[in-house]
Length: 341
Image (cartoon, rainbow, N blue to C red; front, side, top):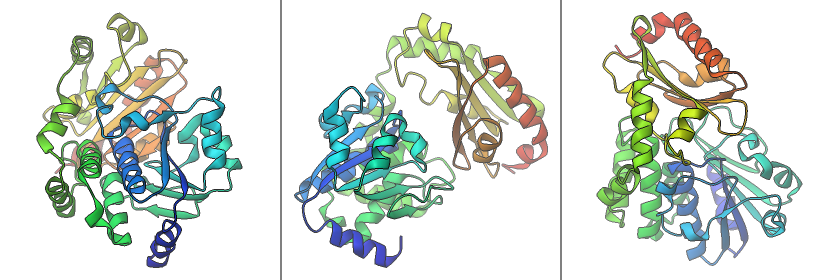
């Protein structure tokens, strides 16, 4: 966004509006944190906002302030459809293409609302009226903080907003360890703590309190872990049979790919998970250093994301997806080996 764009958005939001905030499908901590943080700011300023998630999301995010106001979209619920039809402003949070909102997309296409996208993924679509895109920023939640800076309303960040934005930054930076974490990120995190985000409680809510089923799944994941030593790569597989046997619930495998990445001399890691219902495999990729798993995902796994964190899906048996990965890291062997020097 230009300074002129921010000024226009400020004027747009100067009068109460019906606003729908839409995160991506299967929303993560940054998607929900940025959405609920923006929701609370808009609510505090007399607007009528609602967060409309395309799909449900993990229980470990449902403690977030104002989570009880979130609606989950369904084409069978006319009230949810009417939310979009009656909206004057639509915010799109933490995604770069409308394909990421699944069944909501046709209703967005029909909407005459002002459309605003806030996102930090590469190569965003150009459909919104206002596009705030910056792939160099670690989290969309940090971008919401910068939005407030540009609107001149940082002083309006209350403890609920601070908690939501801190959660998004914490989760999308891998607890502040990814290379996208900057000194600016830490200064913002410090300010959010000063404004009421209780950092240790947020960390505990996100990462502790594992269910027995999740712990057993973690054991399965570790037993399935394979290291490709000559490519400094590793991967984990999880079949739907294994998921069902261990009473899988949405979010139970969150962060498992980072266990593979944490191994000494591993620069690229992947996890391949069979979908419980569809005949496809979900892919999550992570890297350290300069090697782009975003490009790897775009080239081989019908996805994308960031340099060090990306995802995708492949309509093929899991064994074939694993073979695609093994071949792709083999082709990029030299770059992967040197990426973290």
